[in-house]
Length: 165
Image 1 (tube, rainbow, N blue to C red):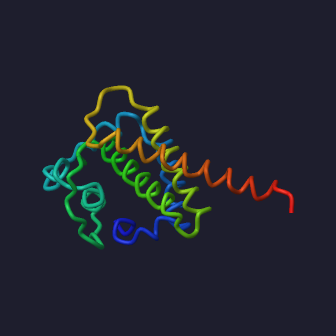
Image 2 (image 1 turned 120 degrees about the vertical axis):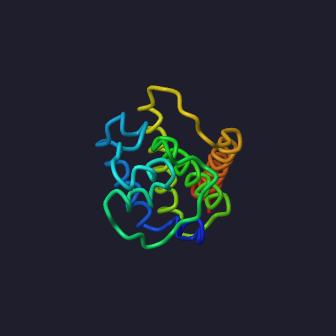
């Protein structure tokens, strides 16, 4: 949420550490839990399919939310779809920041790499079809543009490192 407000936060070590935690969490989550939210009873049953992940977790654990996020256009009733769409959005934001040559490039590249790694690991666990709200052609175009940009930067650096003084 804060990354969407202030894109410079995406290159923070905190975001990197969160992605590392998510990687570990993904290893521990059973496949069936990625396909549906847990069954609930009582007053919070209706919230199982209507609340965003953060608000649902707060309701599930009986925690008062710190902030109330806006309702996204993306899906959130299926955990897999929500995770994928958010990781795709994070990788798009990283791509755009890398193309604009933001500051703190080392951490930004780590966050970018981790977001792509998590997408790969998540999709690798997919055993059934899931409806996802995303634009794969736009996403792939950005990914390829970053790779092209990175290769260009590396070749310029190699030129300067290997050229005679």
